[in-house]
Length: 218
Image (cartoon, rainbow, N blue to C red; front, top):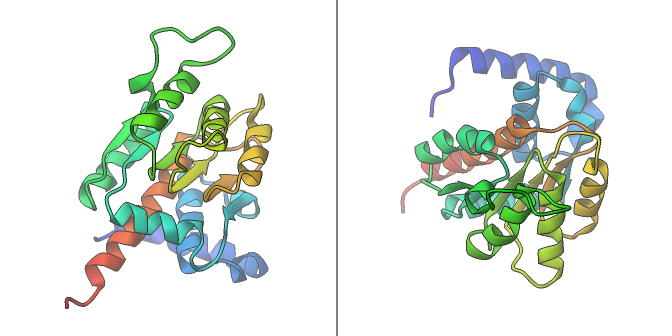
């Protein structure tokens, strides 16, 4: 899998900027660094580096588990069509994972006091998400529904990439994700979005593919 020269040069420059945060980088695995670099590349914002969290972190942590699940073909569930569109090409080029959006299960109108995304999440979790990688970059309500469903006994996703963006319910949903015990990647504060969750997932797909295709045959 060859990277475009512009992407490669961008990563080189990102690494130079991150070298100024040596203490932060010292605690990251190579896979976690890949996720961080790709998120910075997608956002154009090196300042997000201290806000990116992995739970659990380290070798054998959230990123490693998710990469293994993706390599095994687990589906990818997103909260927006934009995130699904950003992930689908990498999924096709690598393990052929199904990519779906919760809006495919959503009602035509939002239920009173909720959102279409949250309503779709409740159904999609039962039909698709056990063991899936779930990307939430827009709707904190969908993240809260996911957490409620799992707390109530629903099977846990392989990974939750929780980076809803905005100012209403966003920080609270990320705090709840941090306390949930689920394997996750989150971005603290109000930043997030479809581009960031897709970048994190694409980094995991790419790394898993490179590892799979470089492994010596038996």
